[in-house]
Length: 75
Image (cartoon, rainbow, N blue to C red; front, side):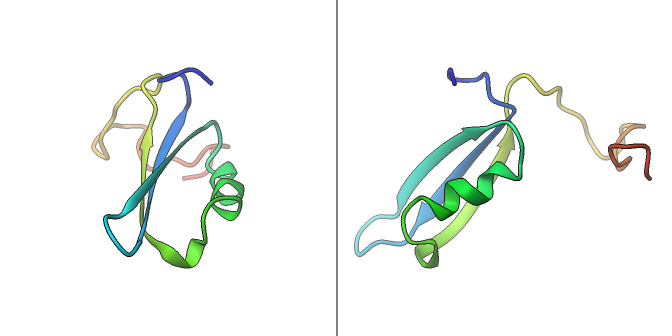
C-alpha cells in the first residue's frame, strides 16, 4: 500500500529498556488492526496506540450533521 493511500494509520508505541519503539501500520478496516498487533512485537509491552484516518478521508467534527450516525442507517 503506498504512503497516504490507506484509509487508516496506526502508530503503536512499545516500551523498551531504552527509548520507546514505534511501529506504524496502514490499513483499510479498523478490524485489521487486531491482527497487525497480534503479529507484531509482544502486545504486553504496548505503551499506547494512536489511530488516525488516512489522507483520503475528509475531515469532519462532531458538529458536522453526519457525525454520530452509525453506518448502516443507525443513529
